[in-house]
Image (cartoon, rainbow, N blue to C red):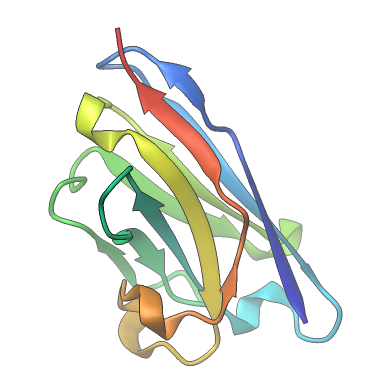
Length: 127
């Protein structure tokens, strides 16, 4: 069983930065068995893939809207995955979720491929 807890969300002005953390608690397999993804959902919109990282950290993927602004990383020793978000825009507003799965191919950011989900953390970009 795997539990995920996100933190680091909040209110930030346009152009600002935030770092989200996803801490995993696992009773069987260690985090380095899992691919991890960050997804977000804005009111009235579908959940979209923001960034995903393979279990080793060697493969990363980004949504087109965040490329060059967001960076995903992981520290398996700390059971934590990070999402560094820079140059934030109002359209980045939403609830950010982290998700995990062992079998996602090439760390694709497709929400339906991930089995374990956190509760989410709210990010609001507004002046």
